[in-house]
Length: 124
Image (cartoon, rainbow, N blue to C red; front, side, top):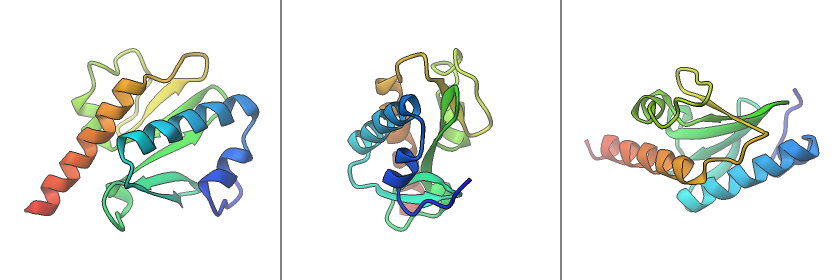
């Protein structure tokens, strides 16, 4: 995979159907976390949920031939396991099929959950 310098460059390099889904996901992330910083991490789009957030303080997304991968952190996947039961999951990831609309409300709730979790950790 090439090294992309920006999220826009990453998205632009994808096939049209994946571009559309990634742009939609990007809009959802920005709506849920408007102050998140957009970066490239591990060669994919990432969003810092707290200023200068390290890898475990970011959420990430990636485009694949049949799905959009969303990486909100294992605790978020666990907290939303019932709502995510119809999607293929990994320890800290979920796959949203390209042939289905992205579950916007669920994604927003997941992002806000993770951000709140991070804020509580900072307050300790």
